[in-house]
Image 1 (spheres, helix red, strand yellow):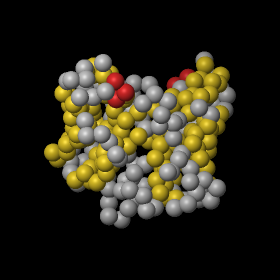
Image 2 (spheres, each protein chain N blue to C red):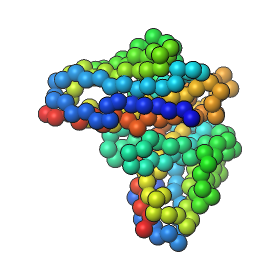
Image 3 (cartoon, rainbow over the protein chains, first blue to last red):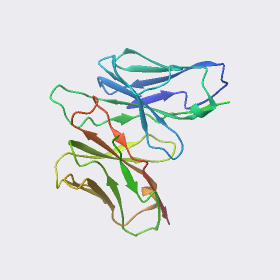
Length: 116
Length: 114
């Protein structure tokens, strides 16, 4: 596997279900991200993990719970979602250095989530 | 609230046409501007990262320019081909913003008819 992979690619769940999205990066990066894309809206940053520590929570409801067990894996745990949470969820990774830099992010193909 | 605007929202051109679209972003505290190409059902793919005012970058038939003083970037595609059909996203990063945060526009959807 190369780049950033995401599973599953499609997920349909009921509002009472609990499910998890998985992301894995094979690029040796030290930062990982969750984004949400709803129809006709820009990519919206949800969470940032730097060196496995969460450094950004962009006012995301608690029904979305991220987990980063190591620098290569990122999960998004979902519970009691609402139909308006239906969207494409993208994972990305990048290499962050203390010297800064443009922070080019590499994306996975996304999970298309439908909440019934 | 930082806002990134892209225009047009969508564009339909014939094969062989040249085209361009715009990304507008806040001109203060500029750090970097990214362009991504996103084909349906695939991952967004990085095209360019630009950091300096007046930067011009080129990859094959695609090129981009950057004006940080007035807050815009242009993406040009010369001699469009059907395989160029995709959504083109720009993303802005500023100094003093949250760590690693990219702010995306809604994209320009390009359809190239053979």
